[in-house]
Image 1 (cartoon, rainbow, N blue to C red):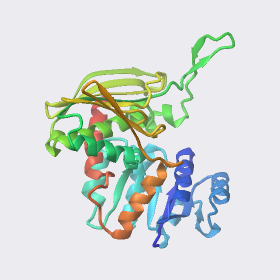
Image 2: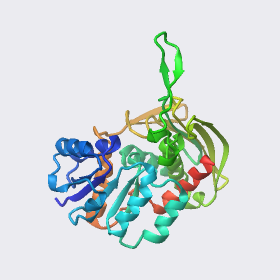
Image 3: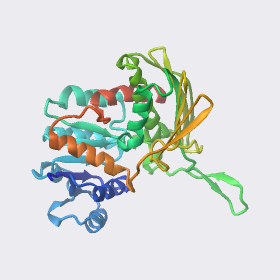
Image 4: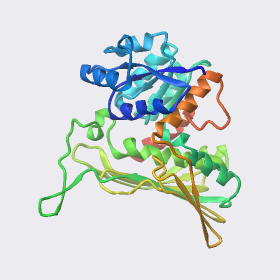
Length: 342
């Protein structure tokens, strides 16, 4: 079987999770890595059996390597635009960790100046490739819950509260150098977590019609800004083309969970864990009945993403059921995020 050779730029925690996914795929190989940290290079090289020849301390050397087919950019958000552009200029296929850019202007710049007919540039939302999302869309299109009315989608975890010795809750001191809380690095709950419910809301709205995305408005915006100037608890309601609506939330201080509820004229569809599929389960409620659908699962959710993208590159065409977000989708979602953050 033909394999696609992957490279990774930036070897942080998300890159390590992504790299594990190669162990579950047959059509892809992690061939090269690049990091400015010698310790991370050494650790990755040993953990994932990377040949020393394909370990680079200069990102440009990885980009220019002719044996690398596609590069996964796993750098902080503030660096995505610069290195995506460098990859595209060299003719490399690109998977950019979410959010792909800091704002819609960067995404528009990529589209207008660096995307060609031969380009492949997609945003890394691993949840989209999991079978539970494909099953969800199939159920909706088959009318399982009737005509869509609204949805709720959240991603929140309390990472800023700690308990004292006596059990009292206390807010942790925010480290301004941490990328999550650093505005220059693209920190904040909306950019880090809110991009998930924004992207999923757009995908569900598009099942009604593509025109649903022509006019999107935000209402009831609520935000708490932390000590470093980034949002740490944010909510909003989206209105798609004056019809379908979606309540969204992202938080570093509230355990909002990862559930999504989609309401229709005939019932309700619930995804218990939208983003990680742990568990991988869909619940359908209609006619006073509850139907639980268990979905296949793998140990590593990123393997679905790696496998699907590699298959497309091997076949040299985008399949009809491919749910990846390309630059036009990214622009739509980043415009929503821009409005939510303003």
